[in-house]
Amino acid sequence: MTDYIQQFEVFYRKYQTEENHVFGFSYGAVIAFSSAEKLEVDKLYLCSLSPDFCEDLIDMQEWIKKYIGIRRLRDCLRRSGRELAKQLSVPTVILYGEKEATEFPKIKTRAMETKELAKSVKVIEVKDAPHDISFPAYREAIEKIF
Image (cartoon, rainbow, N blue to C red; front, side):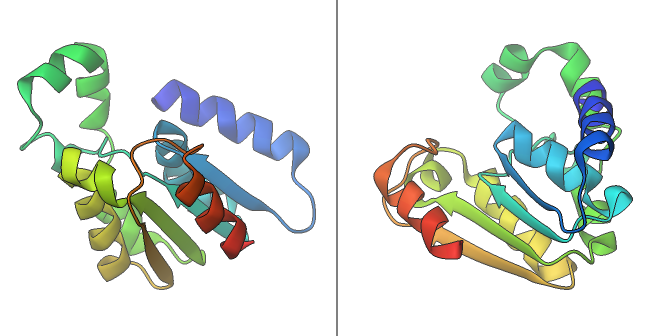
């Protein structure tokens, strides 16, 4: 993930304009969240922010740890969702699906904790939505915020 964050920062700097909104889904949301302050983005949209931070490892199920692998687990230890949230001054909208929060409760936890710790965060729970940005209700919610 750290490599992806660095690659995104290079890409962003190459293509940034006068006003820059950054949008990320799942691990893309982790990348956007992790780099937003450093890049001084104007607005941040995080969809289904994955629980990929050191605080999230405590409750991570064993099958997920196996799935993501030891290198990604070690990389998670380098990022604190809480510290990033405390530093976040960028106006932010976080969306997550109601159904995905049932299956992956840490997604909702990460969203709500970020809202509590950051300065300007709005959280939207998308009714009936799974972890799928193409799900109709998810798409409708995104269209509403734009």
